[in-house]
Length: 377
Image (tube, rainbow, N blue to C red; front, side, top):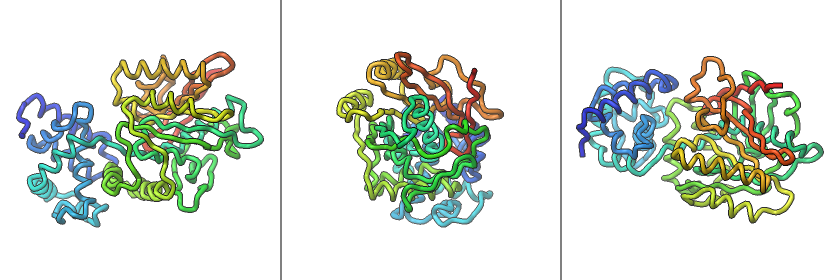
């Protein structure tokens, strides 16, 4: 089927053009591809094949990248532009023709991917902020001063569950470097622009003793095709992210995380909480998943978690775009950074009988930089 509705095509074209001029600047190949796609109705119309919530330029770009990573797809001129497919050709005037020819040959596969897949990066770079958020939680609860306190970590919207290995990764952040807990684990490199309080430095005050992830379609780390899709969602020129994702997948394959498929993540969380051993601090974490919920689902999530914080002591760490945070008002944004694409990390916990929610840090969506929020007196 060919999309020929002018209003739809104009909308898709604007999305690709905006992407090429803003976020796409981080990858020269994606910026060039997005510019060409925006000018070609046959190409930008492909995106309309995706479900409404997934009509994002990165989805079509990931579908193309997946083809480049699939060794069963015959090599084409387009492969020559992808460093992840052993290509070394920079974007040039021949790129549009190479793209058009490839899409013409593989259109049915691309359409099927757009209709059935969603962007799933499972970005472990976010663990750079998550591990400090867990440290802040322990400080506020007065736990783990002498010896790490056991926590039960629940990843809401887990993809392959790679963030459940937060305590195994190494960290180089210019503030409080920590070696990897496993020699095979990746080292996450980010930079704190405004560092957290020095009281959060030092030995880890928490220890993951229980963990589980829930997702409508969790990715099995033993599924080569599914994990190839995760790799396809990483931009081709981002060698650092691609490398650490491969390491994290290998680590998880050796110790597969406990993941379940469920449309109602709160129901799964409710059941999991009832099974936890006493003395374990339960923590739910979500990163860049709330955009896929509608307003009523987000309201239910917020209210349910607030109730469970009060009655069951559940702590909630959220890393989402600011507009999806559980705050009534946002802290001052990181200087020069767009709020729409910047992560706001927040923490909710039980202080005595009071449910407290506060902002912790702004961060790059992939963890390249982090900036601690200056707390009000």
